[in-house]
Image 1 (tube, rainbow, N blue to C red):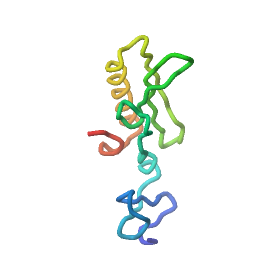
Image 2: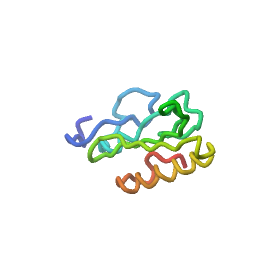
Image 3: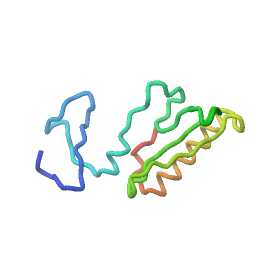
Image 4: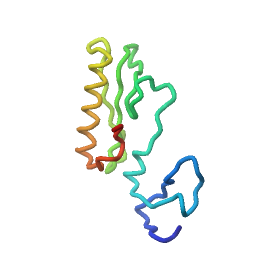
Length: 113
């Protein structure tokens, strides 16, 4: 696996159900790897990085993304007292897409489509 290695890259499995072997791995950037997250089992919305949480006792739709240049997580909350769940989900999806563009993510990474 040393072929293609660089200090600024990280190893990714093509098929996460299979092990780490040369046929199932490739080198990708750390910012791309940061996008490869699984959804929490209790994520009722079915969207990666968007979930319903209690924020100071108020149900909200929380959306989060990690800035690849600073490695800091950026979050935004949409109150379900102010918006319907559908409106909050739409706003959260839009906000997330704007951050992806701002942070320079490739179109295919982290999107549901």
